[in-house]
Image 1: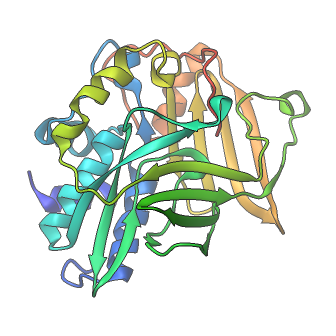
Image 2 (image 1 turned 60 degrees about the vertical axis):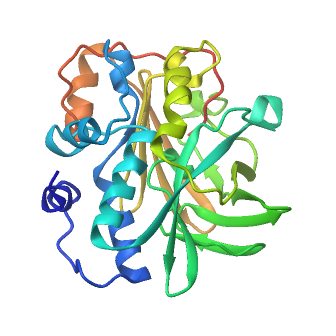
Length: 290
C-alpha cells in the first residue's frame, strides 16, 4: 500500500510532515469530501471486507467508498503511517426508535493525540451527522462546526457524542413528512470508551451488520458525500442535498426521487462512483435519517 496513492485519492497536496491539528483537520476534510460513506457492496451481491489490503484496493485503487469499519480503518492506517499517535476506539450508535444505544459495538472511530491533547477523528458516520473537524476530547464543551454544534460528554468513563442541529427548510412540499428527516434538534449520535481496539474486535459485528434482519444496512442502500457547503445523500432511489446554514440557523434540504435509469449517472457525477456489480437500490422500513 502506498501513502502517496492515498493522498492522490483524497486530493491532498499539503504538508506530510507537520503532525499538528491543522494537518489532521486538513486530512479529515479531504477524505470526507472524496470518499463516500456507502454500503453498496452488500447490495451488489458482494461483501464488506475488513482486511486493510482489500479496503485499500476498494477505496483507493477502485475509487469506491465504504462504511466506518473500512473507511476509518483506512484513515487509521494513513494517520499512523504519517506518524500521528492514533488509537482505534469502538462506538455504540444511538437508535432513536428504541431510545437506546446499540447493544453491539458497531462503530469504529479514532482518537488522535497531538502535543498532549486528545481529539476524536471520525471520517465515516455520514450524512449530516458527519463531523468536519476533529473534536477535542473534553467533556461538556460545545464545538460548533458547519454541520451543527457537536458536544462530547463524559460520565463514569463512557463518552457520549451529541449534535445540536439547525431547523431545515424543504422546498419540495411532498417531502415535508419524509421518514428520512430527523425531527429532533438535539440528536444523540453514539457512545464510546477510550479502551483501545484492533480491527479484529470488529469482525463479528461486520458480519452481523451484513446479515442480520435487525441491521439497518441490510434493508437500506445508502451513500453520502460531504461537499464544501453541505452533503449529498442517496437512500434507495431518494437523492437529497442538505446545504448547511443557507440562511441564519436554517439548512436547505432538497429531495429528488430518481428513476432506475438515473441511478448510475448520479453515482458517477455526484458521488464519483462507478460500480462493477449491479446495484439493487433499497429503502426498507428500518429507521434511518439524513
